[in-house]
Amino acid sequence: MDFFTVPTIAFGVLFCFFVIVHDRRRILHFNVTKHPTSVWVTQQMREAFHYDSAPKYLIFDRGAYFDGEVVAVIKSFGIDHKRTGLQSPRQNGIAERRVGSCHRELLDQIIVVNECHLQRFLNESILYYRNDTTHLGLSKQTPAGRMVAEQADGGSMIISKPRIGGLHHRYELAA
Image 1 (cartoon, one colour):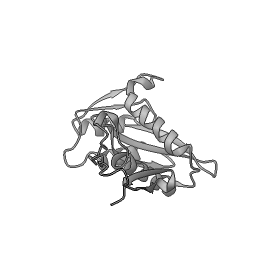
Image 2 (cartoon, one colour):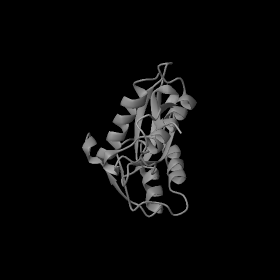
Image 3 (tube, rainbow, N blue to C red):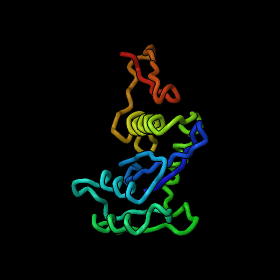
Image 4 (tube, rainbow, N blue to C red):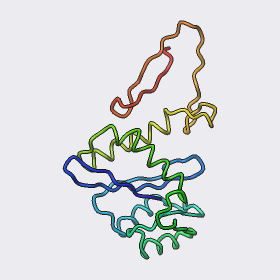
């Protein structure tokens, strides 16, 4: 569970909250707000961990929005929580790598207008990562399980399907 900030075209700052599952680096829940409060964070926790789907452990930083109220909600879910040390990003390395990837692959390429605009792009980015991006550690499969297409003849055409507003593409063999 972590936050990162995104500047907007109107010189404002938006806060992106996300919960990531460490097994396959899957983003379980995310949302965007202008003003993160502990009430807002507790609501995000309820949305992320509904119907007894709470994990055993939860790692989060020492941000002011993770106050006693948030810790009480985490304990009510039966989750053992761990806070990272002060200025120690390596203690939650998976979340930090995901934030870095999000900045490099998306946020460095666009200018964010408002919350809805950022929410739409982040949602498309997560779907692209889950459904279209192949990973060497998964034998070139996607985290969602799309298999690599085998090329039948040397003359097959490859088509490009734009993703995330054309920032990325998915390549497939034409039928």
